[in-house]
Length: 148
Image (tube, rainbow, N blue to C red; front, top):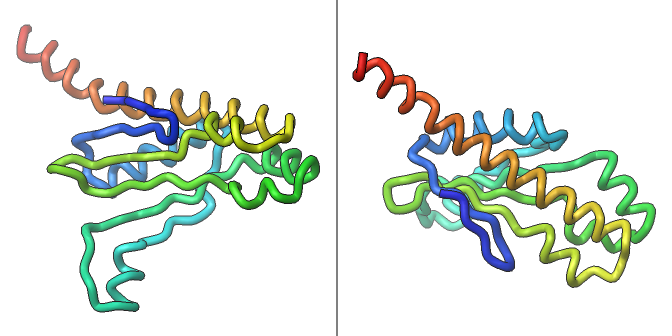
């Protein structure tokens, strides 16, 4: 189920973390967003501290052209760019969470950054909705088969 609050956009899926990352990367690409890095944060924490944490991945997502314009308009925009997406197990499902770029538009006093943030927010929502639809598609196909 896709939900959002002022600070984040969240989606709980029954997909595995690996499959969610794969499908999310494709859905973001369809929206013109690129996953430029994946960080295994749980592995990093375990290597550094010996403490264990559920598999916690952070995807670094970039809109190259949008980021270019935002940085030209305000070098400080790089504090918030690129955006990050969390993909982690959560109560038997996989949680995907993104900072709500539209919220950043409220706190950064720069028109170019505001426009980018609003655009990226809409792209994230469409990508997550596409992921949600792709998750339900196999269920619909199975239901049609069982009815026949």
